[in-house]
Length: 219
Ligand SMILES: *Cc1c(COP(=O)(O)O)cnc(C)c1O
Image (tube, rainbow, N blue to C red; front, side, top):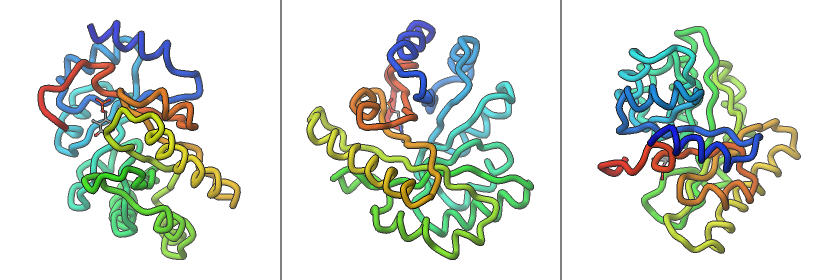
């Protein structure tokens, strides 16, 4: 089942779009199935769960933290996490920098933008993102590298609204790059809205249910 889903998803994605297989709540066995099919990038939204899976699974997996970040848990994943997608404060960046230093590595991060109208979604305003990226404080954080932006659209079928939300983030992404910021990753799109996100310029999609089937409980 997973293999067929994964193959299908891969045929739907343009070559330049990275698939993050969102494996939260899924078992090690299920992840192995996807791994054996060649998938190497997996996303989790709870640090504890990601650490447990990291410990028993092949070490060439790239683990992305996609959930809302709890600062006190950065230390548990700092030795191995490949990309932290949901960074939404300078405070969090400082903690990531501190923990990355302890492991002598640079941790790649995405700043999470609030593009949805819903109050429940975390993230920075575009203005806050521009401020952080231009800040003197960020320059001092030599062990974090902001390589792009991430956004979650409103949970809706309204294509016009989704297009507006995704396009707004693409615009910010382009604007920052025009200013010489060198961002490479624009992470937008999930199982329900990835095709619109890609049309709007996404080059990284985070897909769970389309790859692994529906989750039993909300992640
Ligand atoms: C769970 C989750 C996804 C994947 O959702 P699906 O609808 O299953 O594809 C993507 N991004 C984040 C941040 C998530 O928490």
